[in-house]
Image (cartoon, rainbow over all chains, first blue to last red):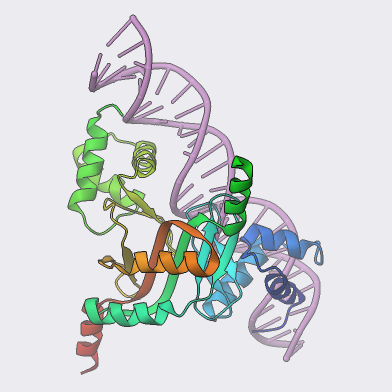
Length: 131
Length: 131
DNA sequence: CTCTGTGCAAAACTTTTGCATAGCC
DNA sequence: GGCTATGCAAAAGTTTTGCACAGAG
């Protein structure tokens, strides 16, 4: 893969922003450095990088898939209240894989564990609102 | 919710076909009974039923979300080889929820655990191809 | 110089929506 | 008869793609 300053900006944006941005969010962030970049380039790079395993595409029930630069498998928490996506550090995944192989004979290659609910900030907020 | 033969067909199609069809697949199946049904109706019903908890929408990295008539929480296995989606009966999910609440203070309301890999059929197939 | 990556715009695809009409209650 | 669901078609939103040109090796 040949160097391009666009890709460099995309990777930097993903590394700096830890909020698992959508393609559109990456586009807006990169446009600050590269005003002429096009959305097509964003998608081309994100797909290419995802294919090479340098980042991960996360399908969500809400509009717009998200992208995550982390490569180690981990779960995601999507707060239905504030819309933020958080990480969950977990070793549960390996255990799950083994169990799936044992019980269903299915060889897992990739996970996508997306839990929706309420993050601790929003829970604290709603508790404050009530009282 | 008022009765309609369209919705009845949709629910029957989902109940009969266990392969977690996409909206388009539901459309094709229902069209056999209701040749004049429109895709808009399919989506309207699927969304309405999902909202009422009668079925579940599953986001996938491949094009087209899928719909699943089962209501009990369970995981999905997407075979990257044959494209089929299978179910995984598991009690792991409750355990995960508790752990997430303990470690991250995040109250889980809904899961989406999608594991991609190779199903047992395809593994057997590829073993046959090699030998 | 060659060949990959980009910008732009159009296209493809999935999903939603507005509106007049049909059908359930 | 009233009101919800439908069919049709247009629109909206996201993602992909074709093409000519710019830039890296």
